[in-house]
Length: 171
Image 1 (tube, rainbow, N blue to C red):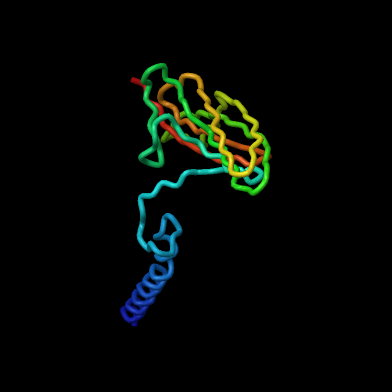
Image 2 (cartoon, rainbow, N blue to C red):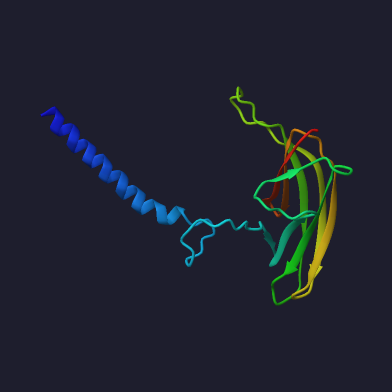
């Protein structure tokens, strides 16, 4: 009697697991949300922020090959990047944006709370673009210290998007 119940419970659990996997895999296996590509893809999407129809993107001095970049203390240790503003509308568009670099120490294995990010640099820019125009803003952050995690955010009107995340190393 007990053996029969255990076997039925095992069959029921196996069937439930198989059904959950069959229903969940197609929805979670596509990293780029492309209906023509049902498999995982190594495409790295570029984060963007749209302000009044203008798309703002950030390009670091060296292109990313993985979602998380590693910043080394080469040269003067400064992070150099461009903010590209492209007007995608049919008319003139204007606005402003802010750029900020935050830093946090790596998570300790004995800590119960996440460390609070500290803003180490901030700047801003204004744009006034005609239809189809593109403008590039160049920024240089101060030297980055090692053994920290850095995040570059771009924001406007209360909307912030993390553009680049990096891990610094001390030598």
